[in-house]
Image (cartoon, rainbow, N blue to C red; front, side, top):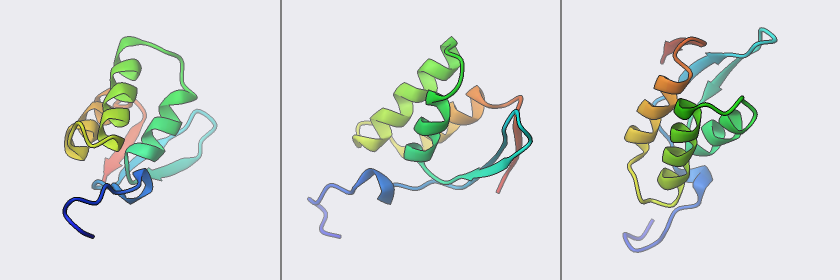
Length: 84
């Protein structure tokens, strides 16, 4: 990829995070786009809203994917199984 080329949101990845959903499903979240989709389905509290904002900024390349990942982990900490 050329340095001036802007990647698509699906191309931005981070170290995977395993999350357990209320219905028992376990899902591997590999980037800010997936995390944004998960957070959009959750009740809105301050941590979730902040994590959604961070994921959106990471997709727009205004924040690093690692920082958005940390915000996602903080928001989903009670349901997170492990960081791969």
